[in-house]
Length: 542
Image (cartoon, rainbow, N blue to C red; front, side, top):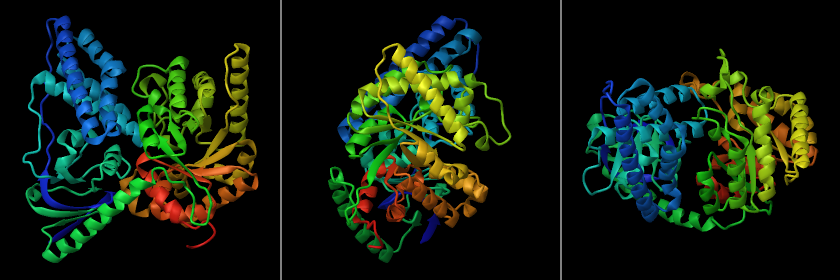
């Protein structure tokens, strides 16, 4: 019996046979075509075939797993139909007279280079979608046979990396668990595994000789047990049965109230990165959207989105969510999160550079267009706006002046809008230290623990070399959070947590007892956190 340690991505127990999964391998040929028109026609046929495949996968996944899981295929179809991705491929075929396969691969690689240094998991997910779509087109164009799982019995899938689309194409009924070398606990694949009730661990070095061996995946401890003995199997079989009973009980909480055991109401919201995630928010019964990341509307394109485009997106989400509140965070772009059209100068330390609200205040035309779109859409629902990376009251004053200009402009044109709540993010030590002053000017505040942790510890959370030193429960961070909560409450305002720590069930009661008014987590964590809220005691240890 051998034990391999990784990182738990989704809790659960799986016992079965390991099957190694290999992605399709292919070489990209590059040659000059005699007729760009004929090559464009060949690409058009491949697009049509890809659309047909995606539609069939969407319909199958809707039947087998529900519409919520099938949305990933809609995202791919939208990329194929409406994004600049296909246009860039066509442009390369025409201008350089290259074959379609090379044009697809080159466009994919150029986008990958743009996105490679980004921190935001949601933006990285979009890049994964583009890469998957490119692979699908290349396979169709060159007639490559796709890799498939063999056999009818479900297996533990081991791979270097596994995408959500690959999981669904292989079929839920054939996957007991997955073990990957790459990925993170907050990737879309891990979130999908959670919604599909598939245990998973990441950061395990997959070995070829594992193929065909019996194993146990412990999604609680992040361990893979190879060739387990009889006693270990019996122990895990008992735990597996208890797990299934727990999951069935959890689904019964979709309509339950988020009230602690001693009667305190905690507002439980969802974080989303695109409009397609709205159905998950409604399905799991979140109170609303506590953080809508708007960066997606600015990335992977050739120019800034127009106000009308932004307005239509915000109007749709406002109408869909109805009375439920939607907090839109203004675009959190910067030198580490950008597109070529922004032409932001390179910086030695982009994480500490011109990002978030600093960039918005530098590029007021972009900022005002987004604010106008948000305020216009506010007439159709219950919207609020949240500003990222605040460090000073001077920034707050500038924001307030711009907001007044936007509202005055809408008044002059008789465009309806609401005076929606304005909030500021506390994700820098500077913002935490002036949290009382911020609270005087805000309708609410939101703690972004991801950036607040790395700035407090002076550690890049993406740097694997210092992973053992990175402590997102550091006493200094906890004191800073408590200080901010107390200061905000001192001004009679509410404060929420929307970073990754909010989705950690072991921290739920701690945050409640610290006095936080609400938590905002990815949709898949709504029910587990709701369970913790309902058994927590707000006034002391339960």
